[in-house]
Length: 595
Image (cartoon, rainbow, N blue to C red; front, side):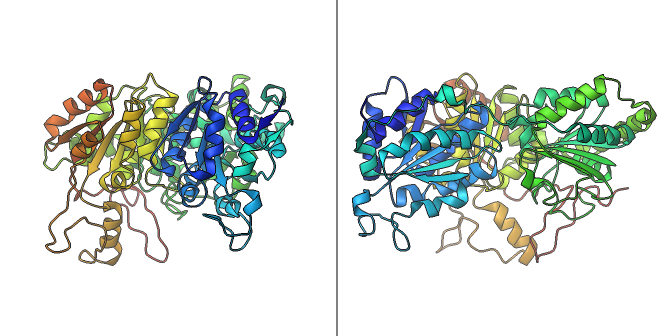
């Protein structure tokens, strides 16, 4: 059977059960769109107004479903908008297939319209390589079946990540008799589930039996490996409190008695104090990045090597990257946790440490109560402008336990890491490692596509919303009931606050939104912007109106923007720190040093 390149790609996507292809048209991807045209009943094409949004939609979809989508973009500047989203997916272990169009192979090296060819012909793969697990470029349609199969295997297996496929225009439209490979025969759907060796399991069990102050640190790899239920079984069997990394924050229910909250500069007091005073940390699926570890500074969040470390990660390059492991295991967190559960159930003796472990849990309870008494009153404050804590408190009340919160990047993200109380697994999505502004704007659409029966709300800054407001038009066009809460505080305040901290209170520049001629604040009407694109818009200036506005927006089942006027002067309480060398690390504002 003869198929052209676009038909081969479409057929393979359908066989892989990909439900959506998301992107933006251009002359470079005309052929692909024509191939998708005849299969609209089997795979839906969604058009966006900015290429990054396509990537953010696919990224968020994978984080919930653990199944990849595909994106399509044209050559030149259209595809050049993709690394912002691809970098977010790569650094947070999310996966999708980014298909980019390119100029026809017959025009390579001639400098046609939008060819990136100054150093090498049609060289868009060099643009994408730092942001993907693998980059392919097909120069004949016969290459596509193999490349598609390898692309899906690469995305899914081991440490997940995005893959890039670059296709010149003629390859989309030229025909070949090469067969499309059967995805079911090759079984690229499973990720690596390798466990620890018997020697490693025994070594971890010995450390666990000896530990008097153990802590489990759950990273995003726990959710990615679908290990949240197993994690809780292990924690309860061994009476081990569980801290999370910020990115792994919804690996455990916030109300569980063993939950400590997140570590790092925006984490909780009890999490940071427990991890720095632990005698054993069992770290699962975390790469120990700077923001979750107080920039690796000893004694703020961790005290390695004084504290013994068991580090489990699917990627062996992460073992020992930043901290010295007592036992390092390159394996599936879920499989290792299950191995430890079996070891405990087989009769691992924890009796010698049971008393001291209970004392440890009692200490942590005191630390938690101290932190709560410090911050809880602000959650119900009636102050105007509205306090950050009140915004998140009311949102938590309006969103059901399985509702999905998507955080964009900005000062509100810091507050979410500290204040948000996750319900079930995979209910908090963030762009962490690459911190791509715009993730929340497109991500809420991807979250709805992945879980249409659960409400999805994005919290975005006023600066972030201004970057990609066209998401509202996309949601209206496809009847997606996304809700965006705009944290309207008048600027890029996380950076403004750093300017004030490091360089002086009067030395801010290019961070606050002000009129150049008068210095007066410049404030956009985001509710009106939404209405202009066919969505709904609500403005909230008083905290007493927050709850009803949020409940109304979710109940509308339509695209809604809630413009919330938030106090820009409230600083986040800190129980740890973060260093930007050579600038000095700030001293924690709460509970420092340890009593």
